[in-house]
Amino acid sequence: MFHHVKELQFNARVSKPDPKFASLLLEQFGGANGELKAAMQYFVQAFPARQPYPDKYDMLMDIATEEFSHLEIVGATIQMLLGNLNGELKKAADESEIMQLLKGKAEKESFIHEAMVNPQFFGLSGGSPTLTNSQGVPWNGSYVDANGDMAVDLRSNIAAEGRAKIVYEYLMQFTDDAYVKETLKFLMTREIAHAQMFEAALATIKPNFPPGVLQGDPRYSNTYFNMSNGMEVRGPWNNGASPELGEEWQYVQDPLSHVIQTNGLLDQQPVGASMTMDQAEQKSKALGEERSGHISENVPKGENQWSTYPQQNL
Image (cartoon, rainbow, N blue to C red; front, side, top):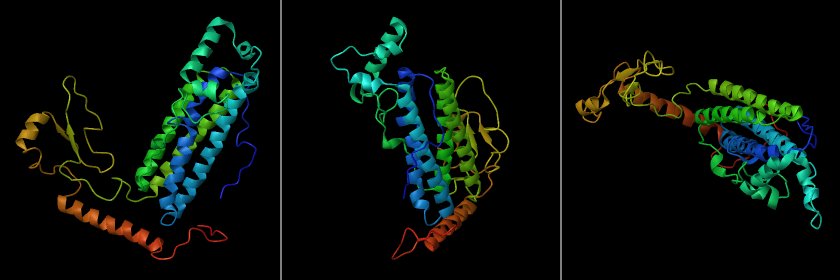
């Protein structure tokens, strides 16, 4: 159940109209890294967590709902940046005063160019926010990453927050409006907060690497192939212990010779791995039974009910 409060979460302001930046800001309204994408991603991810992982469900729904609040802030800012554009477009018989917002011939031509690049924004919607990015590409459900495994989804969310943050960083360089920058900085900071929330939630899942249930084949989990010619670089990604499994990286200097010598890697043996092949199989089976058992215990097999009234605290 959603309840809309008409006041914004953050008191968005603009100091003057700026139609060009309003068009650019559409990127965070209906773009691939925008607020609608984040809201829908966390909203969709919450459904399979509702009964087996009610704590994660609560977090995902809280953050998803806040992202809808952020979408509202972005939409409100876009509308204020357009000033009286919608009203001016109604002056069908008179010359519009829109161009008075722009100083000089170059800016007017640039504005016309923007309208040609994204005709829906100015020519079809009258300036109201559209579910597109800044180039007029419609929002797409394929932006949403939801795999049904909490360790996978939380990592996707951490990455999503990082991408959204960097877009706000870039956007702040294209406006000199102190009020708008204030709003963008708030939105950017909430991306930082959400990323930390997702990282903290991921840390409560034990084990959470590798994501999912099945363990990797120990013959290949710590092999690094030198797949390019030229200067060779060694670092923690191919030298020393691997960060998650603690396995010793095996650096293959000549991948072609190695593949030939090992019969296409079929005869390669585990070296420096944390488990034998049998141990990996046993761990996969045990973890699968544990995860399956947890879900079976918390999801009713027959009649089911989504909510209890009143809701019970976790």
